[in-house]
Image 1: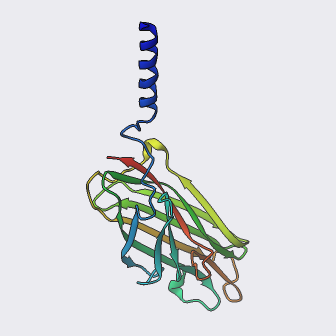
Image 2 (image 1 turned 90 degrees about the vertical axis):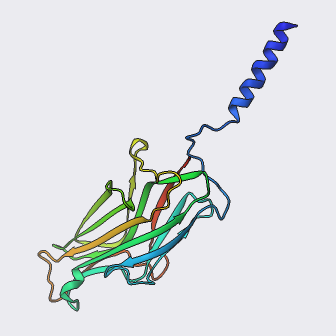
Image 3 (image 1 turned 45 degrees about the vertical axis):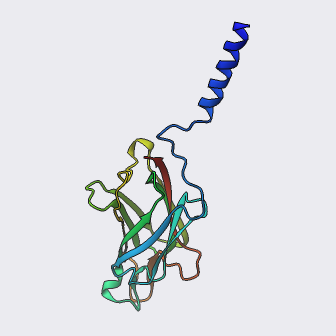
Length: 213
């Protein structure tokens, strides 16, 4: 009889532990309105106000940034300052009470047309307002190339930078595109690197890691 009672108690305890999530679980609040984002500031030649937008995925596991005037170019028909475009965004990210978040990875997408001898660079960084720690990304491109491009960066678990629990800070995202004409024929050809999404097919996706406070 005692053996039966002990077995039953052990089974109940096991079931209880199996259904209790640890305090540091990375599962998040999956309601459709769990996370919202407002673009509160946009500065730079690559994103005049109103040309950048943020959209949260239905499961709150990612958000997407889209741009409509983010193209760096050099060569025939361009202005001397067009070789470099930059965008500085301040995002007000609203998260449910009891949760905090970090950027776990980013999918960068765009279009590149680089003549032979030309090159391009995409630079990006993101950090929480008031924090010195910044994640910096760099991707290089060389000509000849013509077509859509995608680069993916993943942040290791030990390197995740979570927003301090209970604090409201803007998420700052800085992105820059550069095109170097190099040995290309700038009088008869144009090279460009873009994150422009006027057709809705080019965007940047930021993946979210959630943590309970």
